[in-house]
Image (cartoon, rainbow, N blue to C red):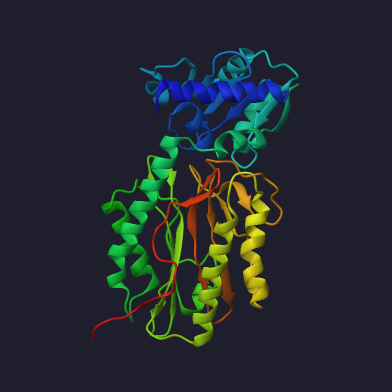
Length: 375
């Protein structure tokens, strides 16, 4: 990320903090801290906290072994480093927060990221502060993607689709879910994905495909099985997340039928996407198709979720999410029908909102594809 990008994001954050009455926001390692600094840290036993005041220069509390990451930066950030002596950590934290002059003001945190470890240090350093969620502020800034972010997500989708295409020839009766998942991971890396995948691929055969979040097992593929594959790639920290369903030879007519209903539901969801509509309207459009087909009770999750630096982020394409879509937002559309004990179908695409519609970042066919093999 360029200096201009970082500075613009930090300025937007400060403006939003002031508008919402926050004195500062504290972020620990994860996609939010990387978004505003361009720096990557991982969660470990040594706490790392980025402090972004509504006015002033950002601060980063970090262990000495990480301080070289601050050298050569082309924007301002003040580092407070601590040693391996645990007894000194609280003092360094307190010194860093003293610089913000926060007092009893509002300190924003991200509830699903902040650990008890960091929270205790914050509470000790700022005993009078009002520590509260800043999730809506951060989400609103990250939801709309810039041109470069979109380019990276398009590349992540391309890598993922190339990897699956190269894996399909290995899918034949007798192979296990684990074997196909491992081959797919190898292909993802071979085709250019970052090693930090969005998630380990879901590969589910037959009845296992009726579990939306199945974990690959040693189950062998049989002729007549549905094959559900949910996978993604990473490009410079940005994710793709795709699902396609295949048939191993001839399958039961009802399974073919639900695959067609899911395909139509996916198309219906995509058809209503454009700037100005609500997230819930996309869910309603997709869900209506499946409800009217008589399979509403078997569509057991929301229609989609935001996508970017996280596999799941805002907005959420749910009947309960009233977020108004804006050009540049990215999310999945992934309706599904799951028949317990028999099989399930899901078709998932990565979608970019435009002013007058949407663009699918994913290009693989959505129709149920039959896989055949030569003995």
